[in-house]
Image (tube, rainbow, N blue to C red; front, side, top):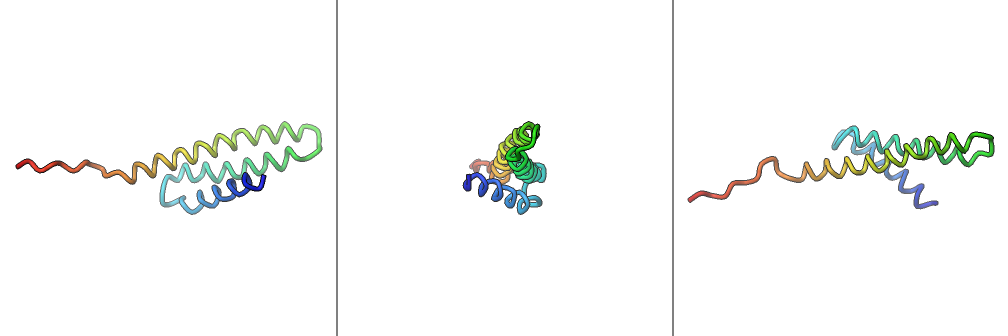
Length: 92
């Protein structure tokens, strides 16, 4: 459980730091994922009626945002790593 919490907090911090450097949409997805996962886990651990249903409703979109955010950041990093045009071989 501690590792999951550390991964979520680390992803939120990474999303905040990379907001301007890489894809802003992906960074916002990571931040939204952290918030949704935190709300989902906090609400579902409550003993009130219907609270676990609300927690699950917040938890699954949080997981989807988490995966989508990291995927988009990875694709963006690969695009920035490659040159825009491939170098041409010398025609001698």
